[in-house]
Image (cartoon, rainbow, N blue to C red; front, side, top):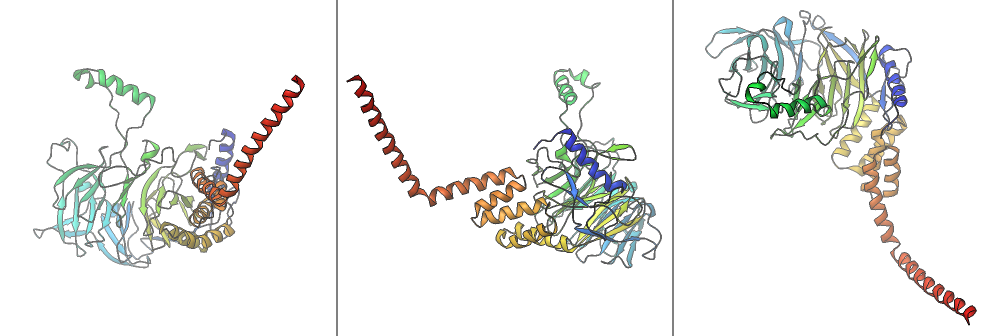
Length: 498
C-alpha cells in the first residue's frame, strides 16, 4: 500500500523519538528507551517490549583486560561464547552467563609444533558438528582451524588459482563452515561473494555474490560497455555489486544468510542463499529490512545498515543495524517481531556505527547479545512475557499447528492491539480451521491482501456449497419469472394493436 509523503514523514518523526528520547512512547517500564513497531500502514507506533536490556558486560567485568575493538561474537553448542577481541589479538571464551572467562586463545600450536599468534582476528565461528574453532586471522592473511586446545588443524591462505585475483591480498573478515566441512570466508577486498573452500582446504570458488543495483546510470553504463571495443573497455567504469559484510548459517537446514550494509539493492540487505547460490528471498521485491524510511538524528539523515545477522535456534532472523544501534527481529517468513536498542550511553544504547555483532541463545530465542566494538561491551537482552508469548505462538505457527497457535495469538493482541504479526497469525489459524469469514476479517486488519484473497476464495466456495440448493432453486424461479413476464408483456402489447 502506497502512502502519501506526509504520512510517511509523520511515521518517521514518531520513530525519531526513539533516538532522541524527547517523547516517551514505551509501554514497558523496564526498558530505558522508547519501544516501537510498525502497523499495517507502515507507521511507527508504540508497542510492548519483547526484550529488555538486562546488563552490559566488559572485559574488566569478566576479570580480564578491557576489550579492544572486538568485532565478532559466536556461541557453541554448550552455550559458551567466543569474542574476537581484535585489538588485543585474542579470542576470549566465556561461560554461558557471561560471568567469567573460561579460556583465552592468543597463542596456537601449528601442525609442525611451532607457536603462532593472532594478528587482529576479525571473525570467529565454532562448528556445531566438530567443535573446531574457525578464525579469520585478518592481518596474518590467513584463516586458522583449531581444536579446543589451540592445536591448529588446518591453515587457509591465499588460493593459488586463476579464479582468484593474485594481485589481491588475502584479507579474511568473517568465517563459517557448513555441515559438510566447506569453509566460507568473507574477504575485505572483493565483491564476488564469499571465498569458498572444501573440507581439504582447496579453493572452490565464490559463493552468494550480490547483484548490481539497477540504476539508470548502471543500465546506461552496461549498454555502452557492451558496445565498446576491448581497448575502450579498459578505460570505462565497470559496475560492481556491493560486497556483503557478514553471514550466518542455519545449521538445521543449511541455508546461509548474508547481510550487506553498504549500497546494493534492497534485496541484497538480507539474503537467504541455498547451496546453489540462489537467493530464496528474491520474492521479497521492495521489502525493506530495518526501518522503513530514512530517520534523522543530530541533524543528519541515515538509513538502516545491517552489519551482522544471526539465525536463532527458533529460525528467527536477527538483524543488527549499525546506523541506529537497533536489532530488528523477524520470523523465518520475514514478518517483523520486535525492535530493540538505540543510540546512547544508557543500558541498551550503543555508539552509532559501533555495534559489530549479534548472537542469540535459547530454543525460543530467550536472550539476544549485542557486541559494541567502541564501548567494548556485550549487552544482554532478556525476553519479556510478551516476547515469550509471541515466540510461543510463532513456533506453533511455523510447525503448522495453526489451530494451537490461535490462543497465544489472541493473547498477544490483548498485550498490543496494533501488533500486525498477531493479526496474520489469527487469520492463518481461522483459515486452517475452515473459519474463512473470520480469517478474512483479521487478514483485512493486517492489510494482508494475499491472505484475504485466499480466505475469500475459500469462503465463496464454502458459501456456494452450503447454499447450492437454494441458489439453484432461485435461478430456476428467476428463469420462470422472466419467462412469465415476457409472455405477459407480449399479450399486453398485442391488445392495443387489436
